[in-house]
Length: 479
Image (cartoon, rainbow, N blue to C red; front, side, top):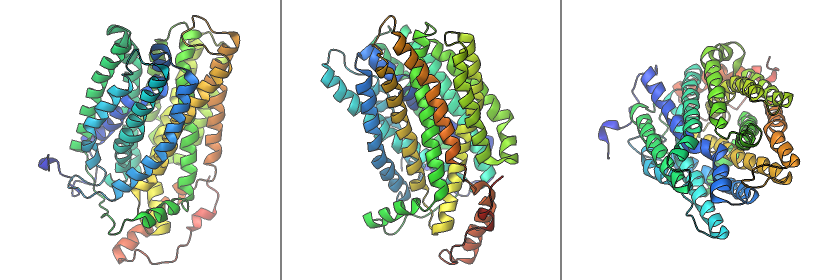
């Protein structure tokens, strides 16, 4: 064991303190330094600096996301079968640090002078290494740690708020510093490589702090038998978990909406506002309001109206914010006001879905008498990453349909209109679909009864006993 003093401590105080919460949040701060550029900056780098076709690159990204489905399931299986003194999920944070750094740098290091065909091959390989392999192998275990650190629903919600706060900080920092750093280092392809070497080093240090200070308290032994038949049975069991299905679809629609907006917004800043560096201003405004709503309003909303209703409220707010830009598409002031409202809503969306996901683990255990943190998170992770590819394709396809031209000084009226649609109508519609997807979600209401039953089984040593009977509350419509 490389770090014996950092072995997992399941006896750690169940009341999670500030240092551990903050350290856990640093994991998403680090993740955003890889994930944020893939959703908002990577296509811009490919089209404006590598000079490849936007539609081809977006298609590569979408096809790669389907490969993610297999990597997510495989990593979910790895988590559940990991035997390590560092913990089941926690161990993967330390194992993947060096690959994480390499992946970040490689993705923004397309060698100059290649033919277009070789560029596409390099993009496919480096993108899949970064997202399909490395990001999955470190972020999925990181996310599943919320189910092993505590089973207290409110504590989980607070941990997720820390996670979202630090994710927001990572997103903001990445969006603010990336383009200025590229300009500082020479505004060429080499400058992108140097920039992401620096960001990659910072991200890896943050992930190490998460590993060092966070511990798994809920220990589930690895299964004695783990073959293909058993794995397929577990996957089939996921689809018995109706709340997991609803939440996964909500993640797919809302995350796709964010990626559509983020991808097209860089072009909006360049061609409507005549300043691509405004992307950093947008990130700052959105994230300031996002943090404010998470700190000041979200904890109260979670206690009063529940996670599902808070999520629906946020989706409605963001859908309205997306359409405000139509008042005057060329006005930075209007766009920044819309960004503030959007950010306010985002303070709810990500925190709510990531706080709801661990509850689905308990519900799955409740109905199937088996606990599968890794597989529950792998399915949701696939939905989230598919959203990144789908969002990029939707945004770029709409822009390509309108006649967008790489690096043009000015775009045609049709191209300008499609850039505007990709930052307004498309994301608004997707957020409305997010509302529809959770209309039947009632787990907030029945969760206390679920936990009570799981505790009874543990005390009585009766994991496979009573015939499953839905809670009485589940038959009622949630307020």
